[in-house]
Image (cartoon, rainbow over the protein chains, first blue to last red):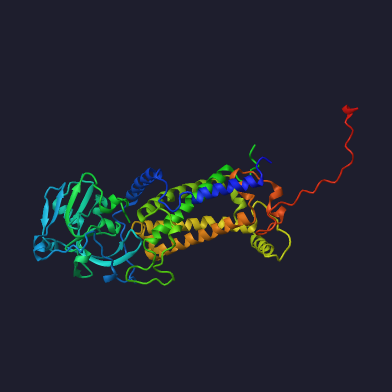
Length: 237
Length: 250
């Protein structure tokens, strides 16, 4: 026998432990970085392929709204809050590749045809929260501003210390993607993104910019706060 | 010719690719789980998990941070799916499935193996390529893998595949089933690895080089966990009749 029992257990053991424990307790070998980037790109292709405007989020009727258990987060040191003067000066601008740039006060926004939906909020961490959001579908704002059909991407900017996230326009035009000004029947409190935020069940939470100031239609994506930190840029649900 | 190998090279390659990819998949999955180690939706409760809010030990996780673990998880899923399809195609086309699908009598044979392992009976039941316990485990594994994929799709795309997610009871439940399916794979794999080292370390050779030696089979050794790991000593052949005269010697 060319391969005796000792050899066989030795090599077998080495192979096994190399295979199983070689790269543990780290984020894996650096050489894998490129491969993971490649996989992310390919996954984005698959995700965009299966994306449908007719696929809708439904909440189970027996799941209660999260209410004040809905986690609140922002990247500034304290809750970004506008005082009365700040609220009066606040505008939601819609610009970039549009025929008619918009600059809306909160009143202007609230005068548009509104929609209320009870949906899930999907966090990248794995939890979900149900809430009833009231706002204006982004597709309506895009129509109002006459967005260029060639704009493939949309950036959502905020006054929360530069936080922004850019999206593919298909997800942005999903009927459940809204510019929200009320949650559970009351105007958004500062903790949840007052005066207006993006909310859509078709994107992970971090893509849904709060403390919204500007919506920019663009020919290319420009990353985002968490996307630039290494989370998936697409972040679709 | 290598046609008498215990395992075809396609089976051996897919087995080890599976071992590595599955380990990374489980480790990264546990890291993702730890980002929010609870099943209840915010503001709600979950009936069926006694460890709500308790993360798994960090040393069991892989990927370093949530984003990294997600990248690994969503990359490895393709490796596992493609690897699995290659394996199934081979097993189907090459006829190996006949060694794996349950047959009448398997339940009885399983019972016989259990009785042997628990010292109720003295002799190893007929081993065949796989004994009945192994067959059961190797047959169940792909079904659990299918469950992992199905529940995985349901929590990867709960809106795009809403009907599937709803069928599984909604997002929180689908996530729970995904976790339990993973746990089932861990239990089966742990049992598998334990049995390899405790009963049939010789099978490693079959899964690495493909070679096998009938003298080392569990049946030939009458092996139970930790018992009769070594083959029976070869009994020296009884002295035979004097060798025939070599005509050229005289």
